[in-house]
Length: 201
Image (cartoon, rainbow, N blue to C red; front, side, top):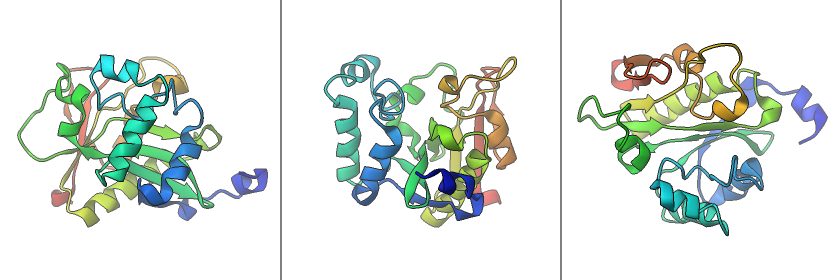
């Protein structure tokens, strides 16, 4: 993306699309050769640890994500600016995220149908520009359009100072708070469970 495009960036120009075969190449470009971080390709929460680690080799995790997209299963949302993806958020029914379902810290608090946002990723050129809040607002609108009533996430509350980008992939609590999410469980002081109840707004 050109320097001018970045300098002219406006949050109002962002659009939001679910990941699909049509925009898979934009997802690839955003995640780059590292698969966002350590060949993750946003499969960490979907797989058992051993399967995830094995998937770091020979594009295993990338291929697994692509298979989900080909099968038209919900995976996540892209934030698009100037025809390129600049941010990503995983979004799918909670039950597909094995690591969340098996978490002792983030156990289910009820049996309601919930869609989870376990991780986010923003192009480093667009960080600290207000993208995360605008993105969450776009996800909320998408959920409304899809008839999703509850969105759940597990962001971090930094204990001291600025949190390194590498540790912010679960999202920052302040962004979720500013977007209208509320803490519903704080078994973990620094990783609360937050929800946005669409049917009550």
